[in-house]
Structure formats: structure tokens, C-alpha cells
Length: 378
Image (tube, rainbow, N blue to C red; front, side, top):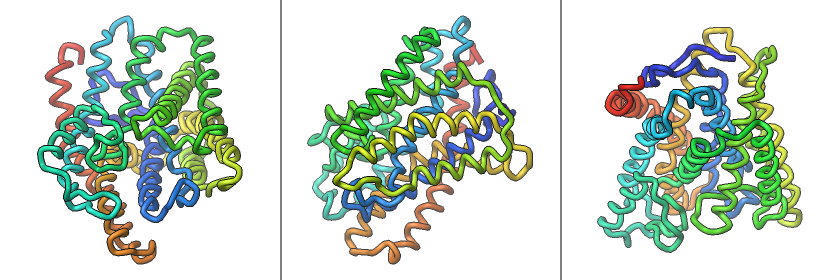
């Protein structure tokens, strides 16, 4: 349920937050870091540990749609479209920039057999930093790391690319849809994403990080369904009394994202069906339960506040260190048990860095930008 715990950098007219949903976002972000740590030991989607960690992105998208619908659906008679875009850029872009800068600073320390960073000239690195900071994607073959990512300095930026597409679609079109029309969009997008998951080339929806036809299709369908489903849920949401919602939903997220690959290489459709159940049934249900629940003790309130505060910064700063960890594992031919101290240091260090970036950079920058560009409104 709604609770009045708002960041000091929030806009003056920001509504009370769903505290539990903020906490769940943090749980999902930490699970993503763990998922990425195990990438160093995986040979494909089939043997990746914490196997379904990629589905956290779909959970983030449905959360984003729900929160955007709640925060803005009733403001459009008083708010201009350009002010909506200003708000979203102020909220997200500072961490995109710092993530790119951290990625650039770490780049020449990440050399391994998979990517030879010594071949990359400094001017090329500077151009890549500028492109990443401005959210301009690059295609495979033209990016400096050589593994095909849209944002080679900070891979997870790809999901922000699609998030921005969602904001554009919402502000220009989707917000004007009737509930019936929005329901139709959710159903059609869900059918498209289910088809991609069950009958597509991967047997999953771990797609979107490359600027190719298949990857873009997968990423766009992930955004279109989950973001629209979150918007729809915000319109029809009626809270019910749920006790222990944060702990129940947190455990559900961890379990759903950690389930081993289903069906193996012989039955891709089985894993695709699992992904479909997650994005179409379980994640909307978790958001509903999380929005219905209420934190009643001071410890849970503090935990949710902290997790919510670090969730986005953690997502945006951890991956340059994953590249470093990956290179270390490959160069030293380490097992996971041998690299465990480094993995724990990366996880804890990323959380500390995220909090430091939040307090020393992100919140001050957002306060300044809000006063500079939204002072008439806020």
C-alpha cells in the first residue's frame, strides 16, 4: 500500500511511494548482479546458474508501467508532454552517464581472450563513452568490445533504451487508450512475446541487448507487454489485505529467477512456457501483492527504503565490474569456488558504490536539474 517515504531528490509533487514495490525492485537488482556473476562460468543459456535472472528486466518493466500509470495518468490535463520527458530524463539519465564513465575508466583493465581491449584506441573509447552517455546504440561489428552489445561499456543500458521507448509510446499514444484498448494491446503483445519465448530461436526471452532484428524484436516485445501490463494493472488495481507481502514477494522473486533451465536443448518450448508463465502470470501477481501489502515494522520499512534507493544505481554501476570479474576468471582459469571471495567483494562493493553514487552524485544532480528545468512546475 502507499507509504510516504520519498527521496529528497524527488519532484515536489511526487506522490507517496509503494514502499514494498521499491524494496522488491532492490531484491531483483541484487539477483541480477548474482546472475551476471555466474555468466563467467556459463557456456550458453542452457547452463547458466541462477538461470532465469534475465527475467528481472521484465519485472522491472512491469513495475515501471505500474508506477508510471499511478504517478502520471491523472496529470495530463495539467502537465505538458515535454515536462513528462524532462522528468524521466532527470530521473534516469544521470546514472546512465555515470555508468558509462565507470565503464570507460575500467575498460583497459578488462582484457581477456574473449575481447582484446588493447586493440582499442583511446579516441574510439571516448566516442563509445559519448554514445553510451547519450543512449545512442551501436550495432554488432561497430562496437569496441566485439561481443555485439548495444552499449559495450555498460551492457545493461540496453534495457534503459527500451524503457525510454516505453515512455515515448506512453506519452504520445498509450496514455490515451481506453482500458479496453489497453487490455487489447496487452493481450496482443503478450501473445507476441509468448510466441517468441516458446517458438523463438532461444527457448527464452533473454533478448534485447544487441541491435539486430531478432534481438530488437525480443527486447521490444518484452517492453511492450510488461510496460503496458503494468499500466493496465495500475488502472484496475484494488488493494486487498496482505500480511508479510514484502517477504513473500521477495522469496517468490528469488525463486522464480533462480529456477534451473527447463527442458534442456531438446525441448526449448518448455523453458519458453516457463518464461511466459513468469511474465504473464507470476510477475503481475507479485506486483499486485506488493502494492497491496504494507510495511508495519520499522526494520522492514528501513530495508525496503534502502533496497529501493540502491536498486537503480546498483543496476547501472555493477556491470563494468562484471566485465573485470569475467576477465579475471578467464585469465586465471578459476573455478567459482576459487573466485568466490572476488564475487562477494564485487557484490558488496557494487552495493556500496551504488549507495555512494546515489548520495554523492545522483540525488544532488537531480535536485539541480529539477530546479534548473522544472522550477516553474515544481
